[in-house]
Image (spheres, rainbow, N blue to C red):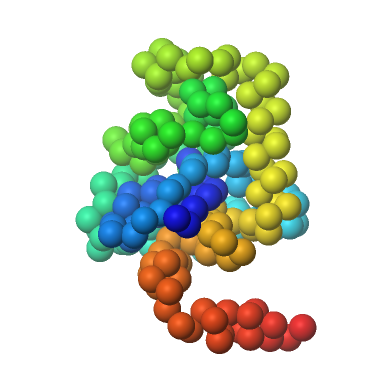
Length: 206
């Protein structure tokens, strides 16, 4: 059975779209999935990049595009009152609810919905406190152990070649972005293209 590691940050609307659609992509395919929350800003810092919401013009386009994509694919999505925001509290809460640096599907779904449904401020302290009470984490989200796990997850993602979210690692291959889901699906169905073209396309310009 193949296994997918799904790298995500709740700040990313594309990660929410991918999270919602992934079960459809995997339908009928014997595969397991683990969810690894990481800090998208940590990837940007490592690669010396700005996030889409930090670039004038690209910011507005990104928001319009994700709202359109949600409409097109039938995914419930409403932009939060403030974006971008600091997602660390949500990442830490996700990991505080689960061991081994991963989070369950149910935990991730709850946190994604907190951000991307309702149009409220995802980082509002009162909302975060109510969410923490509701989820009853086994570990302290503000504890050193959980904080270190967020850093470790992000470092491990960088070491694995992850440069953005959402990303999906399967076998020795990495698929990036919501729009890569059809490509991921084709790979899982053993499409012959990957045997002949994957490495060749990636070697262009080297």
